[in-house]
Length: 162
Image 1 (cartoon, rainbow, N blue to C red):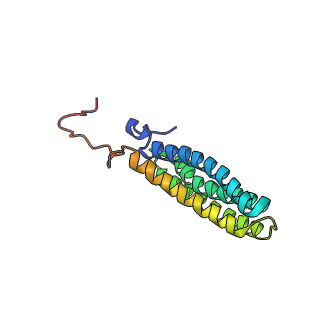
Image 2: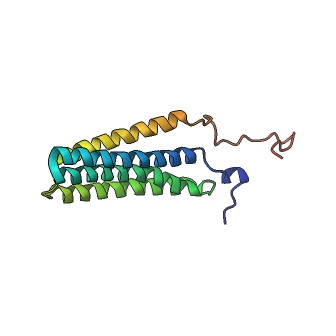
């Protein structure tokens, strides 16, 4: 059971931003999957279709892991071990992505059905679209620059929060 103060139990200001980015990223990924499938099929046949789908899916998965790991780590906000837990989870997510990316590339490199150009273009377009979503979400969210700060009270005047 955590002994965190009530101020520490409120959600962090990054939580709605990350959730919104994940939702909009999912919507953009769905659109890119359809568009990539059509363009990939028209340019390179069934192999292009599969390459585009895999390129978009790989990009979406790896980009979502970072936001999801931060959201998971933020559940420990207010815990005395929050900082090491946070960095452990986020670093673990990055290491997992690195290993899975290398495995995915090694597996996909040897497949006859993969069209490398379509795969690369789908991957790059998906990454750029995800970055655009992140920028738009961050620009549209209204979060004060010092939102997660609790100021100390004056011991002579008592607690003003009550």
